[in-house]
Length: 64
Image (tube, rainbow, N blue to C red):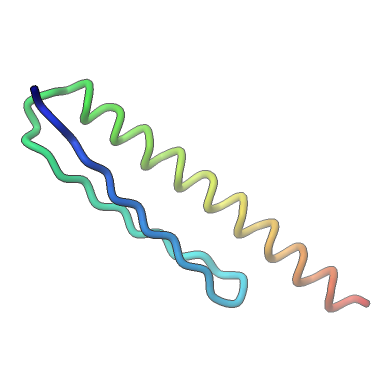
């Protein structure tokens, strides 16, 4: 059975998010690779949304 592992590291510093994604596997199973690609895209989208929300929260706090 082919296996593809996705390692996702997310760090936040001062409202800025950093996303580091690595995939490991033998590449023999296209379904596993497709799932890994989907997880990467989903995680990047979520990180962008969280980054936007953090910036809005920081901006709102600065107004008060």
